[in-house]
Length: 221
Image (cartoon, rainbow, N blue to C red; front, side, top):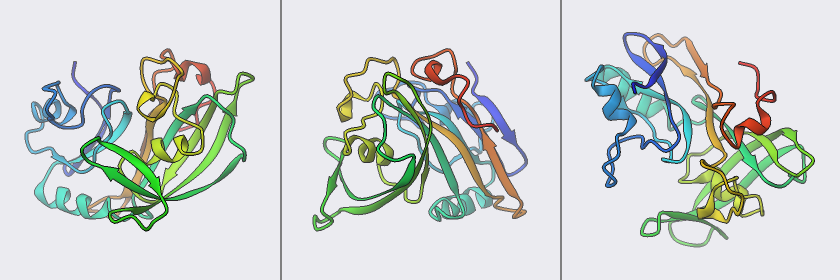
C-alpha cells in the first residue's frame, strides 16, 4: 500500500508513516517508508526518523538543496517543531510541565536510560507536556513537544517517572496493545526554500487501540 502524502511541493513532501513500518531500510528487511516513497519520488531524501513502533508525520526532501537545508533545520528544535500524542496507563501528577533529564543511549541494547549527567555520552533531553484527557481507569492522553531529539526520548522520560507508554514493553509497560501509545502528530517549520511556515498534522487511526480510547479527544488540526 502506498504511503499517504499529506503535503507536497517541488522541494519537499510530508508523508504519514504507519506504526510498525521502519523509517528506512534496516536489518529486519521489512518494507520501509523511505523505499516506498522512492518508488514514486526517486530523489526523496531522509531528514529524520521515527522508531519503528511509532506512526505519524515525517518530512522528506525532494531536491539536494532542500534536503540539506532540512537536515540542518531539524537540529534547531525551536524552529523545527515536533509534537507527539502519547498514551500512558496512569495519571500524570501535573496537568502540564517540562521534563528535563540526561539520557544515555546503549547502542548494543538499543535502549536509553536516565543518568545523573556525569556518565560519558549522556545528553540533555527536554520535553514539554500537556494532559489532554484522562479516563477513570487512569489512561491518559498527553501532548508532548520535543526541545531535543534524543533516542527514545519520550518513551524513556515517561517510563522513568513510572509512566511507560501503553504497549511499550521495552520500557516496562504491562498494558497490552498492538502498538505503542506514541504518534508523531505535528510538524511545523520554515520552508527550506521560501521561508514560509509549513505546518502539517495527522491523527492516529481512531479505531485502533490505544487511540480508540480517546477518539474524540485529539487536538483540532
